[in-house]
Length: 251
Ligand code: NAD
Image 1 (cartoon, rainbow, N blue to C red):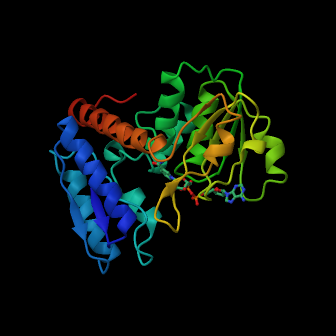
Image 2 (cartoon, protein in one colour):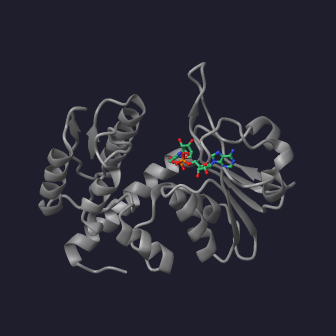
């Protein structure tokens, strides 16, 4: 795990990931670099970790400081050690449906759906948000499970007309309580990816839980829903990376 600077949210995420590694018996190293770290210094560290045989997975906690180009950093990670699945090689593999690593948050959402016995096939799936980390890969994973997928975003006209159609609704917007009960189809599966901190310091999702739970058939809470699943999927990707790096066998 590589963390650059002292963003408090990133610190919490890295601590949680470190704890999860310890609980799973996965050896981990943390590289906490100062905000002043240059892009070249970070690239040198990634190069060292790419070559280190006892390290199977590399995670650079995002966001990196503004003077560092995020894409350059992601592209520098060996795709076989890219446990976040952000490298274009892994993104491409997700597109064609033959992948080793899945971005952790969308993978966690799929695991929740699967473990709840919900069949995606033929369902109207609406993903609100089109980020590279959540929205886009989420849509692909639902498509691979034969969902009929719509991606909504900041330029979508009449958002509610789409969300009200969803049998499975995934909210990944980053706006507190954005999806309200009146935007949801009765009985729908509502999965809230959002993690927003309110002024009173409490966490809340992108879904207005109180109004949504009265309409939804199933709904995930924040905190405690998708967040812990994201970390669990990171552990799964890390074990997969260890196997690939030991055996050279890919999907
Ligand atoms: P992002 O800011 O990169 O993307 C937000 C998306 O929302 C954009 O694609 C944008 O088009 C869309 N959007 C913005 N305003 C909109 C509007 N008015 N109507 C419709 N769509 C709109 O965010 P992200 O990285 O995808 O994260 C989304 C949320 O998920 C954030 O709250 C983030 O903290 C959370 N998150 C949670 C986890 C987890 O582990 N649970 C992981 C990653 C992100």
